Image (tube, rainbow, N blue to C red; front, side, top):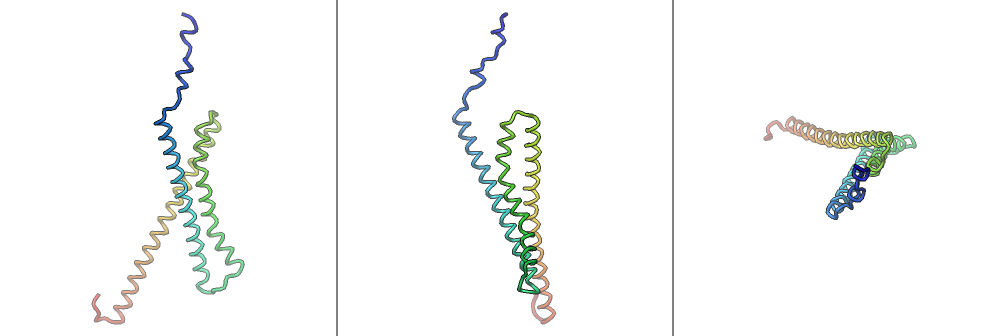
Length: 158
């Protein structure tokens, strides 16, 4: 038996990717970017809502804000802008994870992806929490308004 019998046929190992697989890969890549852009928009919307909420709370007593007031509003919003920017790093990190052959770099990119996924999860939970708080606040406000109306006019139908 000669050494040629045990060799690997490199041409068969490096076959070109079929058109169908390439088409599906491009579709998934575009879909992933669409999801990431959507996540960035949500992060920026949370930042805007947090800033507006902070501004509303701070101007309730005094409508004129000084430098410290605007700084507090900015500090309330900036972390969510940072999260939105971090969202944009996911797909490049996946590409780097996929293309690198070094175990050390695969570990670095893999752990980074887990951390970024946690940030995405936390952002989604923040949005859900804000929505829940808003629903509870409107329900309590509506209930308080009904109580006041019933006390003012006890003969009125509930």
